[in-house]
Amino acid sequence: MQLHTHQDAPADIGDAQRILSAVGGSLLVYYVTRKHKADSLLLFGGAYLLYRAVSGHCPISAAWKATSRHAHPSNVNVRTHVVVNKPREQVYAFWRSLENWPLFMRHLGNVDELDRTTSAWTMKMPGIGDIRWEANIVREEKDSELSLASVPGAPIDVTAKINFASTPGNATRIDVMLSYRAPAGVIGQRLSRLLTPGFREKIESDIYHFKHFIENAGKSGV
Image (tube, rainbow, N blue to C red; front, side, top):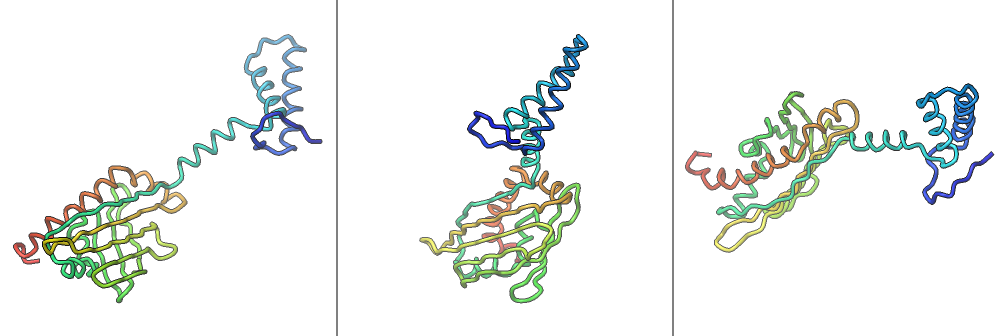
């Protein structure tokens, strides 16, 4: 048996569910009218089941799915640039030494370079503690580009791409694209609540902080 609807949108429940809804809805409406009971809840329930049967749609199920989609882990994507009054070779060398990143990116705990292309990262997340992951350098062009990505299975998906370009006056423009994405699961849901616009603004502030850090590096002995 197949029930048809005049709605253009495809049905989101199967024929078996529609048949059960039709039977259940009919029985509820029959019970209320046969017993002359003014039970608005039962009558509403019967009408709702009949609607499911005729339309092939379940508003409650659709609302639940929409809520679930919004509950999925979110992304923090940062795309910004900064110009620093230092030569490109010096700026690139500083970023290429990944263990320098926590010196100006204050949301990071520490970075350990395990070998030429692999590194271990720590980020402090309030309410969760330290998040640790490993990352690989996936693209490197000396003095021009540095790209990294967390390894598969890491507790957080992190990608970074930094481009370096010389500007007039022997300065350097740094273009940064950085993305944090929480994984699925319970830990991912907890992380996603922290990956907010406020966290993105904190990272942007860290990147702008680099300008002041590198331009004053000689004064501080770094």
